[in-house]
Image (cartoon, rainbow, N blue to C red; front, side, top):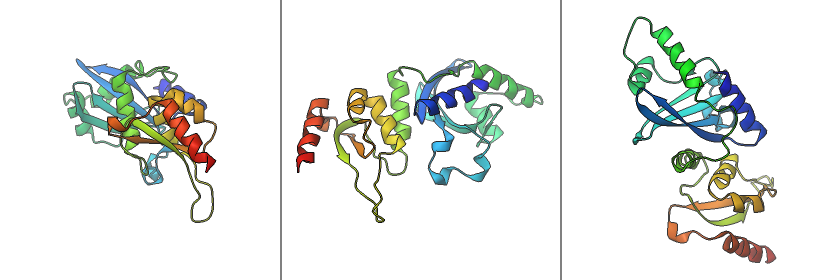
Length: 213
């Protein structure tokens, strides 16, 4: 799965921590959310994962509650039992499971893009946003209603926008993100309440007025 290495390298080069692509297997279609494992919260960067480069979450297009999350390198997956893996993908038990898994990895690698897709479809975007919203310190929701300037921590060190907040803004509000992207002290606020969503000009104006004070 050398494509996975190329994809992660491209994500790093273009400052993405998450992306997604489609995968089909045995008549079922999946969204695969790919995360740079080096950007996971500290509690998730367990010692046993040091030889892996990506966190992959497979989500059934027809039932988003059907998911499987693994960690991966260019050769194989880990993080789930063989039984869980077989059950999720409908792989029958056999004495040649090792060969079957290698065939699966070879087949899966054909779906992995070598570069971050320039545009994700709605399902892919929503899947990425949900993963980002689960990160520690991040808020749920996909409707942007505000931006704010981060303050300082207890040691008077300037706080900055998280990589998760950055990617969420890039996915959901690219034009607004481009307006503020150079200032890493500014974060984007999201909510699940669509009625609170504001336009780019509204958010920019409110922020500018607040900065005058």
